[in-house]
Image (cartoon, rainbow, N blue to C red; front, top):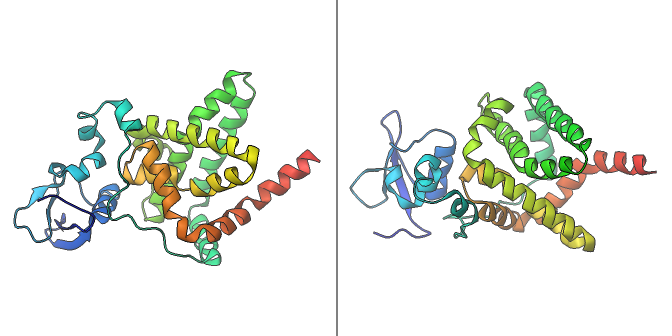
Length: 258
């Protein structure tokens, strides 16, 4: 039975209980949250036979150790595949609510988050002192190091005590993809700023690119494209949120320039 965008699934959890019917996207989230693994039994809603998740073609990319045996690393990064099934844009959100949630998350995890940010800043500053090669290394590291930071913050939002080093280690199978996504986004956004508005648009549109690559185990292009699509209905809200978040940096940069 071929699957399509409306296909739902039932799953047997680790406690033996049956869950469903849920979308393919929800199954992927459970995999990323480690609530399901390649041996977990699922079935398409309406069917009788239970099979392991890894036997479903639509979920094989959620398990890098299986997926990478079927495609080369280059194909894994550059393959142009369709966006994720059951894709939905994010719902309109409250800027004040987002800032409040961020404050609460930071209050509970201040030292790990601050430590990770300080580590990234220190690494970037050190590399800036290396002539010619330093900026090139920074360009390659933007995706992997920020991806690890986003992974750590997302896990802590979900109640997991992940450290920055653990997030860095867990992302090793996606490091090349993150490297290419980060470098590509940086170069294209910088070129966009030559015309101002394209650069601003790409900065906002690709905000969730690295996070989507990590959380949904997509390739570089699909991660960036799904980020762009996901914020379409909330573009102005996200633009306002980012303007507030980056305001201190903008003020300090302008002051330093003056």
